Image: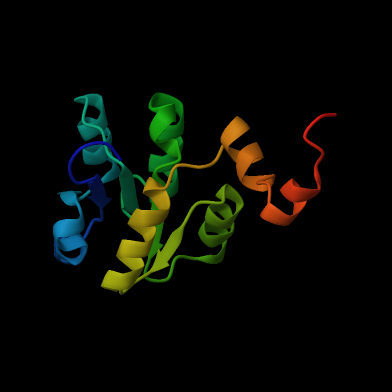
Length: 150
């Protein structure tokens, strides 16, 4: 997460919904709202970094899934920071989101869900040696049974 509060980009074609979600994050994050996928891509092109990009699925012009594809190609490090929200997207869109394995929130989104999403996106994954160490911690009983010399 780094120093300071995480930055969240909220993308929703309804400005009132985008503002309400920004308010929902409260002091937990610095929220930036935009009303289209195009505006979101301009934020990224201007060099702004976001710890979380929360986008509506169904928007005119560019859907949230299309936005994700642009992020994946043009800003690969941020692709894993994308999460979706919907008030009832159609079956094909929902299947695509599920196939991506990225978080999906249903509108209206409550504050607890926003906090949980933010925490899950900011928690660094265990990789390599750290994962190995976490999976194979020595317990005191096993340690006492290991001879001092092998």
